[in-house]
Picture 1: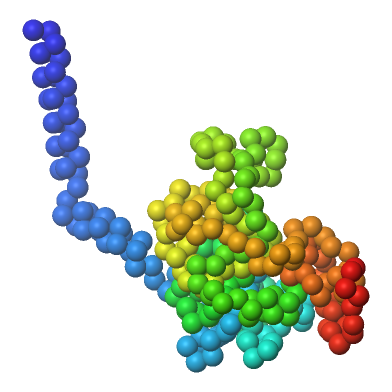
Picture 2: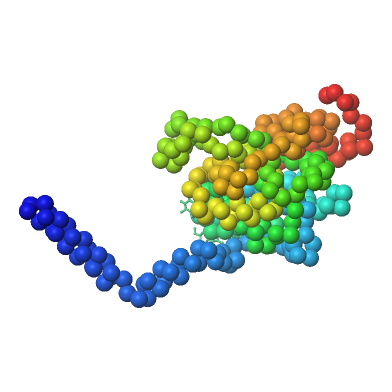
Length: 315
Ligand SMILES: *[C@@H]1O[C@H](CO)[C@@H](O)[C@H](O)[C@H]1NC(C)=O
Ligand SMILES: *[C@@H]1O[C@H](CO)[C@@H](O)[C@H](O)[C@H]1NC(C)=O
């Protein structure tokens, strides 16, 4: 008797709550909810604040380099534009470099970005706050741009503002590949685990990521992927649980797509650390980390000047 009474009280309460929710929603609200849900899939191009000046249909680049950058890093962007990020054709392959930026609350920074964008037309920007923990959004913005505006390119590289990139060697190694789809390379991290120390920059709580192992991924300092993978990562990212660590998040998308990162060369070519400069050393690497704007100019000049010189086999 008592149980039955309890059940009926519950049922009534349920019905009342359900009915009141239903009566709160009218037809237009339901309609707007549906429209909002579909707009997530129909993302508009107008979401972009700033777009670079390129028509990939007419002049498809071989490689698009996407450089994550903060509005304040003007010196680095300037150095990159004058060195490895300068638009050039290497062995008949066109390479273009664009910067990925978010928004800031500082009017002065916004003015800088607007000015740079109109001068160089190499900035991709959307309306999210430009912070370290929004790096995943920034990278996805880059892949979204590739998907919508440059699917004609062959390869995409994602890297940072304090990286040195030897585009000559990268293009040479990429050109040798017969496989040009489902390809992902960089510094392979095959067995990394989440860092559970709250003091760490890469701290990830159990709530954010419960498992003890990350899927294979490549260090965010610099990785290269075929353009189809960039498109697929962008598309699949909507059903992958969000993680603020962008390189791991991209790895989670790759796992969903069943794509495994692989090496580009039998020798290490990507470095997440700073490699001491020497022309012969830098001729056989793709990335070196913690390079200042001033060093970028010196290293690049040194590298280009030494192109014709012989290097000893063992360095
Ligand atoms: C950036 O954010 C500010 C507010 O912080 C906003 O007024 C502005 O419209 C946003 N967009 C751009 C392109 O600056
Ligand atoms: C990321 O960007 C969004 C949108 O601008 C903002 O609301 C959020 O606070 C940012 N997140 C972080 C961690 O900065």
